[in-house]
Amino acid sequence: MLIASPTLRADTAGAPAKAVYDEQADARAELNRALAAAQSQQKNVLVVFGANWCGDCLALERKMSAGSLASHVSKRFVVLKVDVGRFNRNTDLAAQMGVPLKKGIPAVAVLERDGGVLSATGGGELADARNMGDEAVLKVFEGLHARP
Image 1 (tube, rainbow, N blue to C red):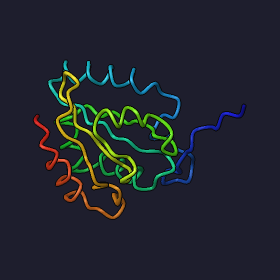
Image 2: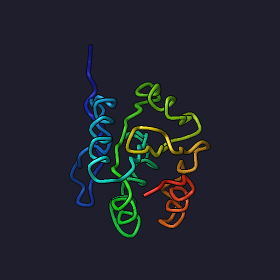
Image 3: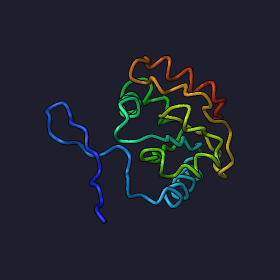
């Protein structure tokens, strides 16, 4: 059996960068760690479902890592990135959170510190992240009614 190596993206210098979505991670164990961190930091958890092959997923990661959107996200959320592969990984977790992956990725769910789902994207709202500005992404996040 062959095991594919993680898909890597190139950084600005053309060198391979670390994969955004850990294709080998145990998503449920990572979720438990994120919930523990959220509890101690008094934040909610932003679960981002995506894949390393997905240009919009990588674009959303870049937007969430810099500028005003990064500030907003870091103040309110513990972020957990969950790899969905080719829609063959962690789909049960997405379904439990009410996230319809077939509507497009990246897709997100906001969880309370106790693990309860506050809200989730339901119609591919972030599936065109590469063409969305920070304000448009922020509007989607605000629309999830996540409490600080």
